[in-house]
Length: 264
Image (cartoon, rainbow, N blue to C red; front, side, top):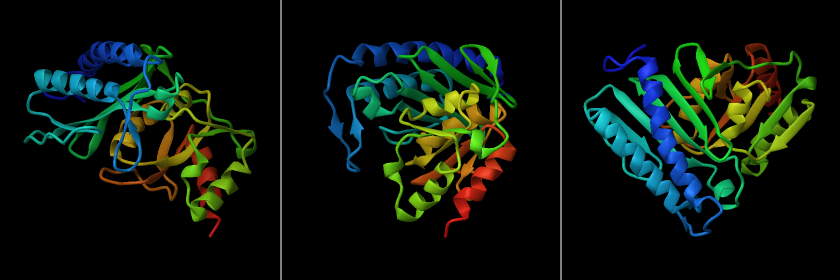
């Protein structure tokens, strides 16, 4: 699929060059400062968030002046275009300010209601997942695919924080966690890259807003994985506090869904 007569190759080249710049900004702040502010929802934001999103917006507006932009830190830019970019300048801000390496920059691209691009860039780890093709995700330029186990009992699962779940969702999550082999916590968007690269089998967590989950969808699906909410519904725009489940295969995804929905 192309956008404004640009191919997937050209879009990949555009974001690659852009993320080379944003990665330098992130690393220039990384472990150098603890200066941050708290937003209305008590989530942290840093100068790096603002600088990175500003740079991404300026580059998009220069290359695609008619496109819409939705970002975490600034007001939406609405034009008449059918194309919309989604930006999370630093996903995992808590990790970033704590000096952990597993933060990332997320970028998604929609054509109408269809997601046609997704990017996870983790500059401190030098790993970048990009998907602008229908059935392909690359990591650092090389195609990657999910590698799924067949049963939950052998699955390696990740969640950023189980403390995000309310009581009802906690019981559902606990049913799933009790069924898998090992669970690891932390890592935010990096978990979805690891899933796409075949190192994780399942990710289950709550994500707050569209910029948190929309860019992840193409990366997971392009590598052959599945990502939905905990009821098996497709993730769509404008959802808040979405409970997300990503799995390395359709079969494993259904087994995980069965565990999440068996607790009432």
